[in-house]
Figure 1 (cartoon, rainbow, N blue to C red):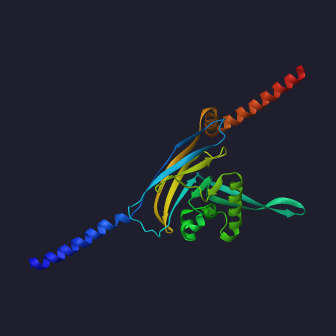
Figure 2: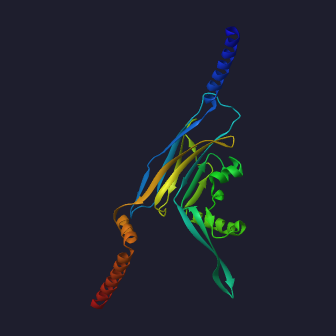
Figure 3: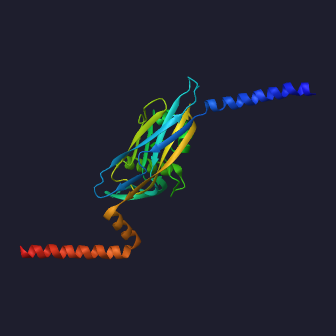
Length: 259
């Protein structure tokens, strides 16, 4: 019995050893970070750039025919967008239709090693919302998706005009075989709040690894104090604003009379 069991145990051990030794050989991991995790905005802020960098911990043996791609996405806090469509009625242009898009990113930037549409299937790109054309709201004020589609595209075009939505098909710069970086523009009109920097590693159209890092955009100085005052005590803020306008109006009229 012992002589029969020994070859069987030896064979099973060899199979398990082959599986465990070959599995990590083709595994890839992703490590990423930010040049700064907080952007402080004051009255002199005119925009800046942050750098998303990372490294791919690749195995020593890889399939030469496989294709590796990296996608970096920075998303702003979610917001509700009201999109209106004008129509000409009796020679006058008026707002005729209105749809609210709930849960759209207030800022979106995507960079990739090549055009995003070539990286994976449309279902995969829509699942991860990669590319501005694959940004969809969490909900809409209409129950008909075909009716809301022109409004969604119009909202994306408007955000692109404001430079709040952008993508760069060749924006990922590889410093070596495994090290890469991406420069992300942060314009002056970005909303405040918590952002996320997401990095995706694709291999032959499949997401092999992903990592997310938080990024904070906040006001400092007098702007921050005024912002907190306006939101915490809106009534007193409105009264103070009206009183200041009255004082400035009286002062300007007094100076004009003196001249």
